[in-house]
Image 1 (cartoon, rainbow, N blue to C red):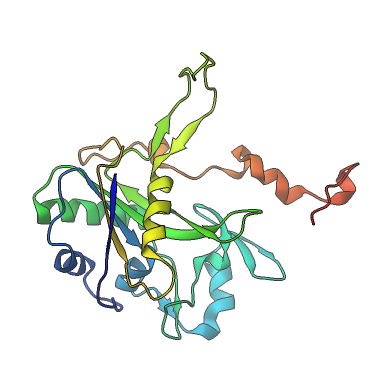
Image 2 (image 1 turned 135 degrees about the horizontal axis):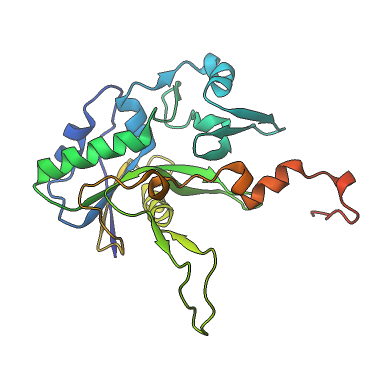
Length: 243
């Protein structure tokens, strides 16, 4: 697998994203994956706001909020995050919100780019970063995708010693997003596009996946980590002590 970061001029709000991509990537090959940072997708949709609107927007963009000493923990359509994904970094004294419908946008972009480059198989990932509980730093993840199956299913398959897997699914899309974001950086790198060649994915040949196959978000009642949100020391005989 080859991961190529594309250094570009600055992208500003309401520019054409298709024009920006085709000007900066002369050739996409059949079977490539294109990762795009959510920031330029949001800018193309004019999803910007004034800094003084931040508190109200966090509530507006979230299903649930939990106040912490550091930031607001927020539940959105694709899981828990920080401050509803609203970002001040690389925003030129403004706020940049997340794209409105990244899954639909990924589909539109992917189909348009296949026509532009004259190819049949193309995967597209809109990336974002997220904090992971009890881990330092952020990691890249998928905000929206299209053109390939995002999961590799191991359920019912044997491991090295013949034990059948009951629940394991490898999140291919998030793994690719994490690799792409590592190349993109989060400072002044100016690499909003990443071209991935020879990725181990199954392309969907332009067809939409079923709702179940396309959904990378677990409902809270099906998420093992949801128990953490009901945790308190009074409910445990031997509470853990973090140092």
